[in-house]
Image 1 (cartoon, rainbow, N blue to C red):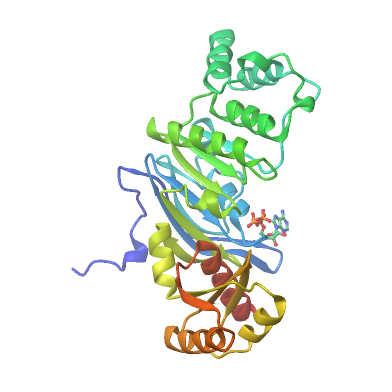
Image 2: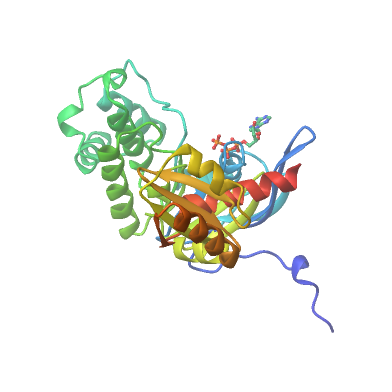
Length: 320
Ligand SMILES: Nc1ncnc2c1ncn2[C@@H]1O[C@H](COP(=O)(O)OP(=O)(O)OP(=O)(O)O)[C@@H](O)[C@H]1O
């Protein structure tokens, strides 16, 4: 007897996969906003979910935790079917939404108390104390949430979504608008939680945050167009970069943009980074222009930002 085609097999996660979904598709009206997405995340991994605005990150996250029903596709989160067992998934998942969603006119402690009641956590007082200590919020526990800075608000939101000791954290742009020091502290906390075995899927627009993830997945217009470690994604882009030192003027940048092989030109102080897929043409053009002006040009490192801009531009071209 011949085996049925792979797509007819029931879909099962391996024992170390906390998220294993395939073919996820979501339509709003006639628009397909998530199109045939496969995603696998292993226990203890921190996976960055990146992509332009409106590319389907939030929608995918919401389908994974069962807040939104997929139109097509299947899979599991924490071993539970995302289509039929959303209650079990929600109990073991912490979901930090994009917008601060706690009560501004309650204190930090009162907000946590409210969440602890929702989950019926016991003993409630001790659980809140432990969470306040763990997230460094104990000294501010009586401060009204509405008077907190962005960084402290995010810390409260994180406290509220880890208090019930979830096994999976879904973070949707958790540090938008937060200053660099608070962001770094937030990420130290995320890594500490992952070291304890928590699995994290985090959407972000920040390159430095993408670089802090074990792996990244890039989605554009609902379709995943790159995935892997940062080094893999950069290498697979095939982009080459040259740096011209000593003249970051707009006039030189405009001239560089007209050269064959040049796809991106970006100023970095008095340097200009020139990026393209055709390494030979890029080198020829850039070195000739630099020689004419007596400027130094040398090969540089391609950044993740360069790669994302290319992925976005390519995806836009396909959409049109
Ligand atoms: N409930 C809804 N009804 C109709 N359209 C929706 C709904 N929710 C999302 N969309 C649309 O689906 C697309 C994907 O949105 P989504 O929020 O998933 O993107 P995103 O990648 O998270 O974006 P951002 O980075 O801006 O947060 C967008 O075009 C959005 O306008």
